[in-house]
Amino acid sequence: MKITAFNQIHKDLGAKMVPYAGFEMPVQYAGVNHEHMVVREGVGVFDVSHMGQFFAKGPEVEKLLQFIGTNDASKVKIGQAQYTCMPNEKGGIVDDLIIYKMSDDQWMLVVNAANIDKDWNWINQQNKWDVQLENKSDDFSLLAIQGPKAIEAMQSLTDVNLAEIPFYHFEVAEFAGVPNTIISATGYTGSGGFEIYFPNEFATQIWNKVMEVGASFGIEPCGLASRDTLRLEKGYCLYGNDINDETSPLEAGLGWITKFDKDFMAKDILEKQKAEGVSRKLVGFKMVEKGIPRHDYKIVDDYENTLGVVTSGTQSPMLKEGIGMGYVATDFAKVGTNIRIQIRDKNVLAEVVKLPFV
Image (cartoon, rainbow, N blue to C red; front, side, top):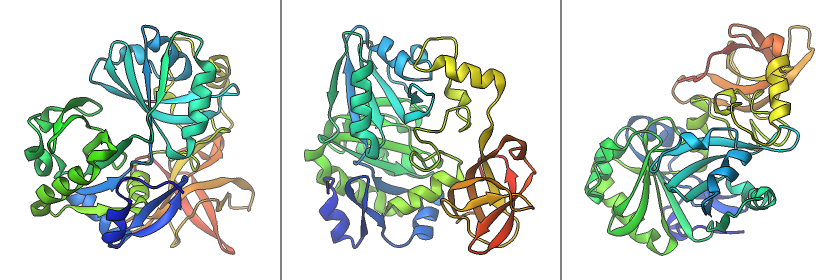
């Protein structure tokens, strides 16, 4: 199993460690609900160094990104990031990722940890242009400093005005005494904050500084479990749960990052889906009756006909009720539709709702 540069720090802090995407990662520290509320109301820090970083360079780099991704990379300016996904030949999703425009001929691609090797091979296979690709995943550490107090808590560590970095923009600057740190106004919690990229050798220095300046703001380390409940409350997809090689962006509600005014892999398949409609859709639902939905629970109608499966589910720490996402037949995807979740031997009533939950 791989470890991040923060592995010993997590263990020293008493984190519960679990295998995740080939890494030993902290799943929780003080408890999932507690960490969740720390991020919603204050500031928490996640080690997300297991994510992959690829660098793509060359005068034709944008052509490669346009072909492998559904979103329109030509709209991204230097210092901006963009959420996109890579479709496979059948229109399924190889991965969802964030691309960062470092300069006119250099981009950084941040991919999911479990997909690093798969994505690397896929992108290289599609590289019909003179684009230099470099996999720096093992060299970089990444902290997500998330929550409404993140700007105020971290401002003393950099000369960059953090409040002036717009959402999905980034700066390359000194942070906690480390030069050329990527300070990105991104994150997967929906509570604001930053993701900080830097070489592994500075991990301890940056961690200690972040915790030191954040102490008066109540900063706490957070694990993968609260990251999952936070992203689910916002209706964000998790690769491997809500999207995979068999789900299309249009089924998954990612039509907003699928731009048909350019050429890309499997465009014809997705155009056909758009024209004819899809047979299933990813929906959000809330439990009407008491129960907690979990991954892979069956979704049925009143007559026990199978409609689909739960892809993500939990007891929402904010709402104090069961919430989830799952694929259902399109006829049942309309907001307000009643569905039932099979929890053990009961079909428990739920209702399709508009995302996000919070």
